[in-house]
Image (cartoon, rainbow, N blue to C red; front, side, top):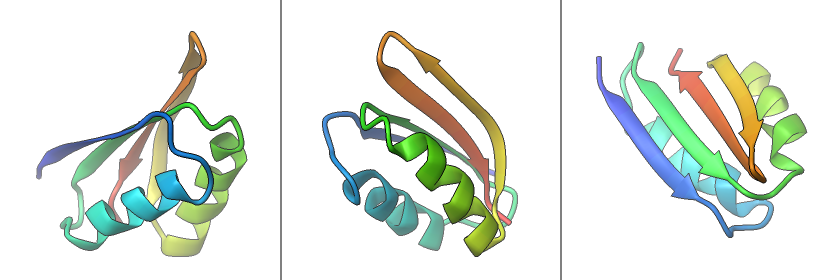
Length: 74
C-alpha cells in the first residue's frame, strides 16, 4: 500500500478531478491518495467521482479555503 499526494490548489474544475484520475489510474488497490484543492465545487464532485469509480472517500475536510480529501483506491 502506498500513500500519494496531489497538490491541485489553484486548479479549477475539471482540473482537480483530472489530476486525481491520472494518479488513481497508476495506483493499486488499497493505496491512499490525498488531494488538496481550492475549488469549492470539488466537495460535491469528489463524492460522485468516488461512487462512479468504486473508490472510497475516507475523509473530506475543509480548512482555510483548502479542501482535503483522502481516497482509498478500490
